[in-house]
Length: 258
Image (cartoon, rainbow, N blue to C red):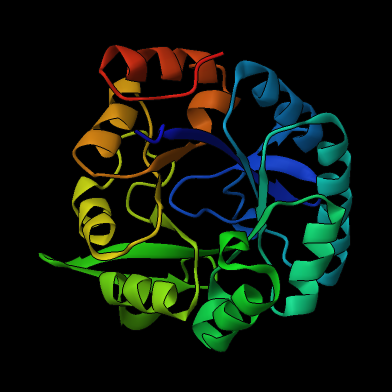
């Protein structure tokens, strides 16, 4: 049986890790400075994290250069797989991140604007390198809509349908971000996670809402996710990666233990 993955997420703004609630933005004063990304990555590497995700929320030319440096420095001292997203718009951007030491690249708004980018990346680097991140918000009793540009712009797309199409285009993994649950610590959106997990043939990473250990177990068991992504519970010292894995193992969920 494949083990379930526990993945800390670092949102990087101007070279520093930040944390917001429901996609709060820097210009609105909605972000907290958490620390240095390389130091945090090294901490989680020692705690037994299965992977690390970096999201460049600056998403500018300067921010991209800063993120390349962050990935390069992290890859030099950490031995877990690294995924990086934010501001990746071309295969050349993907190439730069992979050369810096990333194992996978995550695309979101750029994939929505140019779906062929998924196929171009998969053809050039392999599907295992291409992650499509989906920001979904519940807009009706049984409908979740995809939002772009950091959760600011509605697209009119059904989240489940977009996930299926992204995989058909070559995505090797889906990261599902719940806008409603993001940073609230109220638990993952189990319903949309399960719907997408049942429809696609690639791993689904659940993101948004982790507040208690049981939340992570629930989304793996009831939401049928393949991995859990979390930020606040790790960054602010509420739990370590090792504590999460011990809890999951006690629930009978297969995980890689130190």
